[in-house]
Length: 249
Image 1 (tube, rainbow, N blue to C red):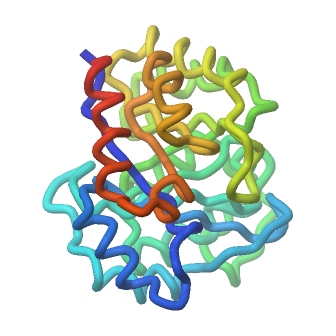
Image 2: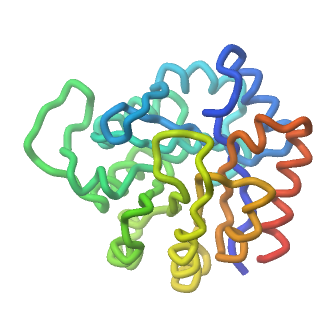
Image 3: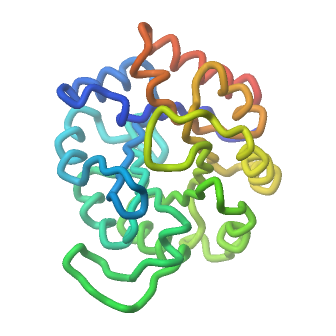
């Protein structure tokens, strides 16, 4: 049996003029986590917000009482230098820091925005560093990245270097509202077959119309933005998304 269903609405689709209330309402509607998209205008062409916004919304949602618990802030770091921001987001209230594989293999080991170094980091070093800051670590891959780049990371005998979650992007990262890419689901299926207990997240174009495909492939963490925040009855949508995953466990 795969891990439990986790619905993580993306606040990128929320009302930014009343963001704190939107976050608390979404948790009250039955969401497990909140998915927080951080974009820097470099790794992806769009820009969103940074740690100060996370700091402001954190008091509106109780911290989870246990790992992976209700109220988890799942920060999806679509940024070129992910190690630089780990400490800032930990202080802001992030619970799960999910960086991109593609950024980790090209970025530096600098540990703060003011630091400069030519030393490179790596996905395993990133995971170890995030765990050292008492956060869960996630690793994400873009549609153009093959899933087998993760095997060596996931099979590492040192559990401090193994991610707690893998995010498979089902759109090209950078903008909300894109069409779901079913072509990425074989990656999810391959992950689920190799790692039956792994939390596998999908992000991009998820809704009641596409969640069955993702759940069939083995995804248990569902990110949905406009499908939840644009709904007349968000609680009903969250419930249906969750049921789609639970019925396939």
